[in-house]
Image (cartoon, rainbow, N blue to C red; front, side):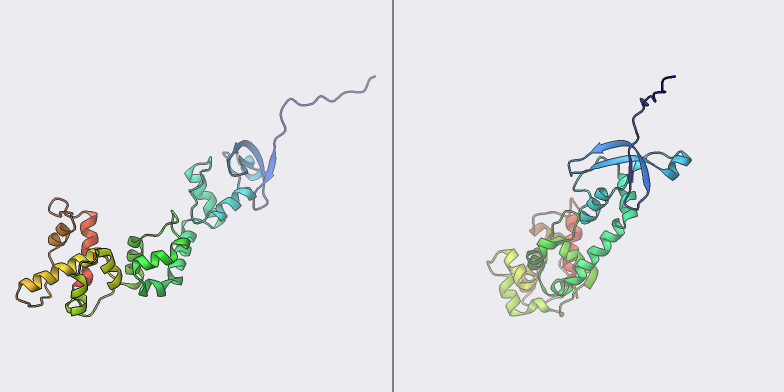
Length: 245
C-alpha cells in the first residue's frame, strides 16, 4: 500500500507576534504606515478564549514611536482610532498626565527667567525647547503661565507717575519698544499713556482712578461697545489689573 501523502491546508497560516510586554498575539489585520513599521490588529490568547474583539497590538516599534513623540503625539498620523491611541498611551505611561507633568517641570526649571525676563525676551531665549503641543512659544502663553505660577506681580503704588516712566511712555518710540524697556505688555503701555494724559488734563493732579476699559480698547483700535465680553476685552482688563493698586 503506497504511503499516504499529507495534504497541505488551503488555509493561510496565522501570523503571531509579541507585544512590548511579551504576550503572544494572533494577527488578523496588517496596516502599513509611512514611519517604517506596520500596525497589527489581532487577539491575544486570553482574548481568543473569551471571543474578544480584535485590538491594536502594541509592538515594540509602535511603543517606541509613542515614547519618542511624547511632546507631540498627534503630529504623525497613524491608521488607528482616537480611542486606541489613548488606550495605548495610557498603557505605556505617556498619556496626558505624563505630558502635563513634563510641561510643568519645563516651566519650573525656567522660573527665574519667567520672573525676571520680559515675555518677549523669554520667548527669544527658550523658544527652541518649548514644551507645547505645537512646539511653539508665544508671549501670550508666557504671560498666562507667569500669572498662573507666580501670581499677579504688583508694582509700587503710583509707579507710573515717575518722570522717567512718563517721559518714556509719552515718547515717539514704538509701543513694543516701550513695553520691552518697562517689562510691560503693549496693552498696558496704552493704559499708562492714557492715564498720564488724563492726569495732565486735570491740572497736573495725579489720580489713581482706573482708566475706563472702553477708552483704552478704543485707542487700540477695537471697540468694546460692540464686542463687550470678547477675548480682547478680557485680555486688556487682565493686563490693566497691574495698573490698579
